[in-house]
Image (spheres, rainbow, N blue to C red):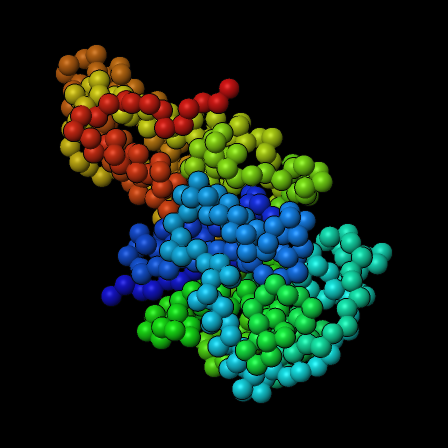
Amino acid sequence: MPKKFYITTPIYYVNDKPHIGHAYTTIAADVLARYHRQKGDDVFFLTGTDEHGAKVAESAHKAGMEPQVFCDQNSALFRESFKALDISFDQFIRTTDKRHERAVQKFMQKLYDHGDIYEGEYEGLYCVGCEKFLTDKELVDGKCPDHKTVPQHVKEKNYFFRLKKYLSAVQKLIEQDEIRVLPANKKSEVLGLFKQGLEDFSVSREKVTWGIPLPFDTKQNTYVWVDALQNYISAVGYGDNEMEFNKWWPADVHLMARDIIKFHAVYWPALLLAAGLATPKVIYAHGFFSLDGKKMSKSLGNVIDPNDLVKKYGIDATRYLLLTQFPFGQDGDIKESLFTEKYNADLANNLGNLVSRVLNMLEKYSAGKIPKQVASPVSLVPIGQDIEAMKFESALKKIWEGIDSANAIIDNRKPWVLAKDPSKKAEVDSVLNELAAFLFDLAGVLVPIMPVTAATIIGSLSAGRITKGEPIFKRIV
């Protein structure tokens, strides 16, 4: 019986256009989803857009648009970008979906009825860019450290969630790895939060009009990030399809960047416990990256649109280039200036050249047929454990070691020389059999990571008559 595997990305704010940070997380999730499908697991892969809150309303106003129209336009950009990257999501959720809104209201009502939401008053410093309240300790020169803006002083009636009631239970779940927080340094970081005296938090905003009204006080809207977290349950039937919900929940992996780890590893499990629901199994936070040594920012003009990368390098090359920059889970620097060099070396000259050489020799020396199906002489080290552990760079390194070995077989045994001697026909066939077998194996391990390339290799080898055809990665000058 197949196992279920439910993986999520964070949902992305529509106040901005897609960039390679969004692509990085989503490609990683796609690799995991494809890998589990290949294993025969029953997979649900969720991504989408976060569309409520003050920041979105402000961006819509600046654009001279109604919030919903603004959201429709920008959400479509994310869909198009993910389509360009061949992302195999099962659902693209939007927090303006009516199903999501109904689920949020049911969830919030349940917490209120249980006594875990209470009315209070909040006074503090609020950063619209972060969509959160900040303490004086978090400010740098009186400004938000991320957005470099002076936060607003806000005083308003809010509703609060009794976080402190559930802190010890959440801490225990993390300590015992019933909620696995990965990588390991993130677990230590999250456990350190419990020593800081976490307080009950606001779950509503009185003066933010773009959001989901609380069912028990429609003058208040659900705080945007509280609303957003619930996409993980609304997408799989919370509140309207018990059978669907029981099939998929809890999530097997919540994948995200490290700046939202507290919301996912502390606040979200606490909310779920209050609602009587299971907590996610794995929360994985990857690092941040700079771009050619500089922080990505609009003001510097170095925010890369993933669609531009796809246009220049192709789908699979873009996926490969992003996943091989540095170990997933760590902070690192993406060397865009070296993309073309790496593309030519790894993809055009190595992988692409191997495939072209083998197909060419099958066409010339074996009448476009694989002489006989045999086992590959090159052992591709199993990479399943690496993919499950999200060690994508390590998995690809092992695959490329196999490609190097296959190219070495060609260079050492020189089939083109053997083919000149009719008495060496059996030896030529042996080499071609082995190389074709390797390409089949190679395509199999590339399926989750470079699906277009994998399908192209299999298609070429399975043709009625094999021909060299066009290079799968053309060299870029």
